[in-house]
Length: 88
Image (cartoon, rainbow, N blue to C red; front, side):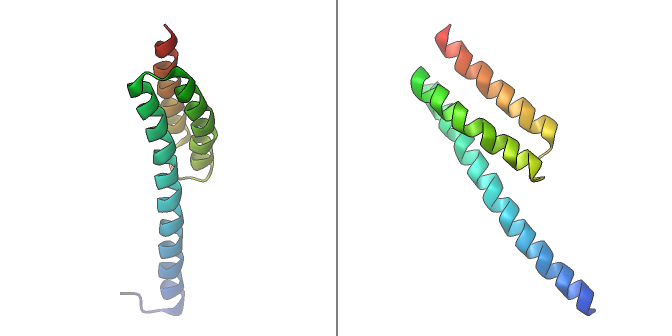
């Protein structure tokens, strides 16, 4: 348990930051799920639209520190590849 005033403040800051990051991560995962569902359904137009909205969301999460930049790039790349396979 935090004893000093600064340690108590640090604990409060961590709680707030955790809540913000959790919300950002959840939002990002929702966008990713929308793309994956469109791909699974085989709806190319919907998948392209979902990918177009998911990519900035994923990169934004990376920029905010929710996940590493390379992880974000990998996720975008894999989603783009899945969407591209629909047209082939």
